[in-house]
Image 1 (tube, rainbow, N blue to C red):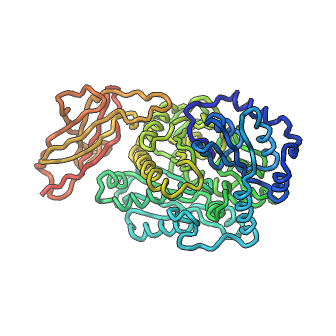
Image 2: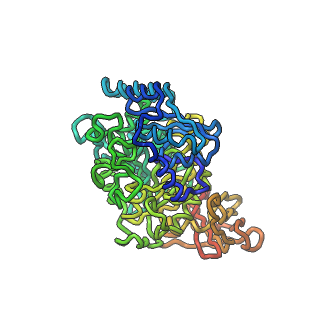
Length: 560
């Protein structure tokens, strides 16, 4: 998705309609407002990179509704967007009314054009150790696949690497890639486990997304056995990672092209914007707004619902790991205890989004989706909101997974640009979103219930005393306020978590004598009588006065 960075003040539909109406004025005379240099640029290039300067952020956001930018720089007051001749003329028509200036960024236009021509004539450059020029922190398709295979080789009891489908080019015997899923779980613990499905890079040019998912995988396996929370999560749950959802398109983007779609060359065959937007191609309420019928548009929805092999693969895989838990009507809610969670990683805009994207009405599970969305935003400090708060979309993967299967589904919009600088990624985007994704895995057992309850934090054992902080306040309230409650109870379990057969609850007491605040210290004395020598896992959870139990956290207890 292409969004703008700050969306706290939602732009209502009337603003969109007014802008689009304004855009129609003079649009039939697409050359009328072009300078000779601009006209020449369009003679040489089907699409140009346009640089638009603006005086205030609200103007930039209005422009972004209709002309999806590839970059917005609020501090310096400009945005960049790739436009065809007609859209450029429409945007030029808005200069007097919006106080903007619109021109062609010749250097970037020539750069993009040269890269595209080189790819068309010579193919995509060969893989090198780090073949994304200027972005050494991001792995290529091949490198991320190699990393996944190495994870399996080094952790055979935790990981598997499966071929789940083909890219469009591969279906045409023109090279292309397998779509592969890295599955992480302790294979020695049997049974049906809650599943978290995390997908990245469905839009090719969004560099940071696949690397975030790949580093999450590395973090999980590297900390298994030493970090008690990571250990219980992989023991009792499954993590499914589709690292490269659009590998054909991603290879074009790795060459420096601002490529969004897949590489289906039957679309826009004579133009430079081939392919379908895979995040407008899903079959749930396909073509119900927020997508384009023009094959050369970035949001082209494809010839039919789920027409693209990549889309079919995503949908088939989701249906294979998640049972259908929602009724046939759009007003049917999934059961409150529905298990499983889906997160698709995009860039950019610093947002946490949830269904619906094609209607303003709240989803049947909308209250619970909002609660978890605000919890995610606590970790990454993004703005949490329903997807349509930006602009209408349909055929998206998160609407499909929720709408078809009833699974709690989210989009994280990482960072502030498509080709995010590595310093931003390493210092901010990765650590903040790693925490959010770990929370997604933590609550995968009951994502419509657990986030409403308090978190168990700062677990420690000293001299036989277990201590923890039980906190019900960790929500991002930048877009509305999430209700919080006082703590009512806390308890711990030894080795057997609360959801398992034979689990025994042990009460904890308030450190200050009573549970009467939204954040409380809790403690208990653990008796080791009857416990075998060696390491044991202590699970802790808390309950608030609305009777919401939060997710468990864990700490290791070593018995001599």
